[in-house]
Image (cartoon, helix red, strand yellow):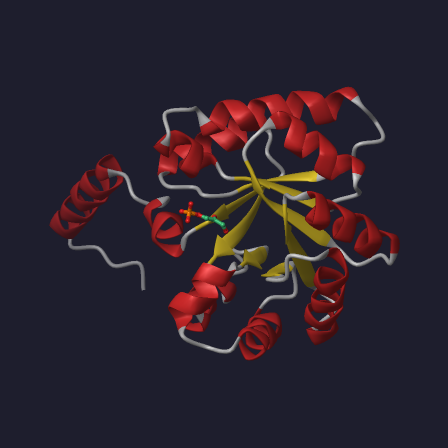
Length: 218
Ligand code: G3P
């Protein structure tokens, strides 16, 4: 499973890029607004740090305007993936951009039929929002499972499942077990993945025992 980082903060991306931990980046209008920076500058900077897919979202409502915005965003760097909302206009724009071989990420997916439509429209990625489904008492992880089963039934559906709106470590484990192709993870959760109390206790015990030997490796 690929790890994308879900942020528009350059410093956070830098932190992960040096050890090749992150395969790509996803942004959305809220994350760009939170960063306080210009979308085109931000995407350009991210693309100098990350050679993998970098999602940048259109903000138009109309198909033709989405296509125009998508072309501008993809023109920033070849690894920019155009993110489009799961609406009829978004699906039409997705289909047209896909025909131009511009990669797409259809976002705000909350149901299996929506994911099926996005795949038929030629989306490169589908982004089911699992945390937001959990928020309303519906299992987001179950949705990933449904989409995986549907896509695996048909050889002609090649859309990659990008699990989004990940809120905790368990989400990461569960979507990996199901076989999501990508998890886009907020930086805070990405850092938490390394933590386990038994690792800390075990390391302390090892180092205490080691100190008692008086040995040194170098
Ligand atoms: O990139 C979209 C996304 O992951 C949203 O997450 O936490 O705002 O539901 P959240």
